[in-house]
Length: 122
Length: 186
Length: 162
Image (cartoon, rainbow over all chains, first blue to last red; front, side, top):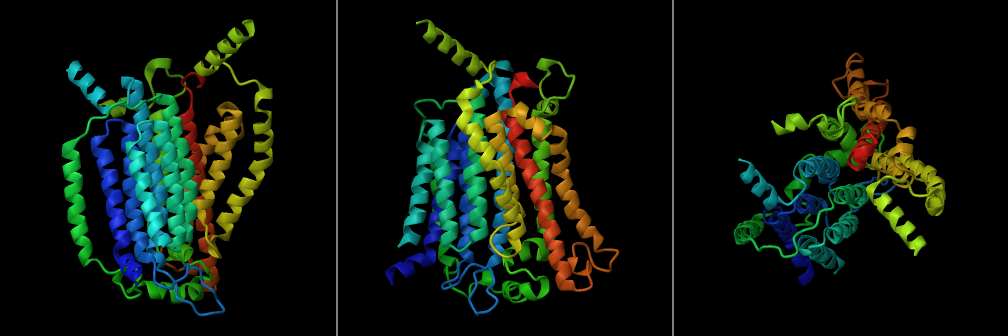
């Protein structure tokens, strides 16, 4: 009973914590690869938020069983997040491509070193 | 009970990803994080999303990260500096969002707004109208075809971006850099 | 001592990317990859085709198809991989999938439907919808597979071999 009561909000809290982790990584880490990983964690927190809403107590996966009645989960958030994952990996790949160009130009992917170099060149 | 344990493990993995200083280890833990996420999708009955997460998040993302790590031979500085400003902003945002969850509808309730308006129609009409038993596919390709067309265009654009940024034009001098580099620098 | 020095030299050459790994070193990887790839591709096609009845679809199947080619490139090298899936073919496929999607949407216009209203494709709207969904999934699969291969190839490309 206690656990059921907890589960009505639990996933919201988890995705807020994941969001905080991702946001901290994006703001505080100097390494650009770490920043992109933080972006990925933030993204998966958003995915968790949406898909938690699609679950219905006693529901089953939204694949129709034609010969019997059943309660189905909400397919709409799943559709949206399915495409969001693939778009997310595309975004990650473009970010990594730009990181590689930065490495070619500066010889490092540490943000503080890059900023220092920029300041020296001015 | 497992519905409590898996998200908890996700949080632990997330914290480990951010605070492990070895980048290779960090990427590997991120791969584990994606796989646990896939298990969580199965627990939430989002099977299509689980397949995507397992193949994209744990497979392709990890390979791309490792490829870039191998190219840049990057190591994080052994002693990270603690960033109090970032921590304050993060904690404040988290506190505000936690306060906001009080007003959000209870999860797992069949009558919450997200599953009220158009969704029952999708579920009851999908087989009648499209002959497809997987409602997710029916919504993806038919009911919300425009969305998917846009998403595929975005994916295709990402491929074109990678070509533009990283591929060299044939006949270019060796040190002239990739085709799109000049444009990026301006 | 001499053997050790030769070994060290070879490792340095490998690290600098001048020398391919000798064939016999990779014999298990190469053999297993050759056996495995057809099955991975079959599974990818199954996931695309089975998306209407069970979990799966164009996005997932496309990624699995792309992974099979990525595995080939990882084991046999980019040069050998580019011989199988040429750069031009990749570039063509990246936009071909979106084109298939868009053209299937357009096809229903002269047949009396709206854009992307596949029901107009056949006399029975239900079969038309089914056909349209199938075609669209194939288009999505082609684009996603080609984009994944392209991203991987462009990122792992060594500076001295193009």
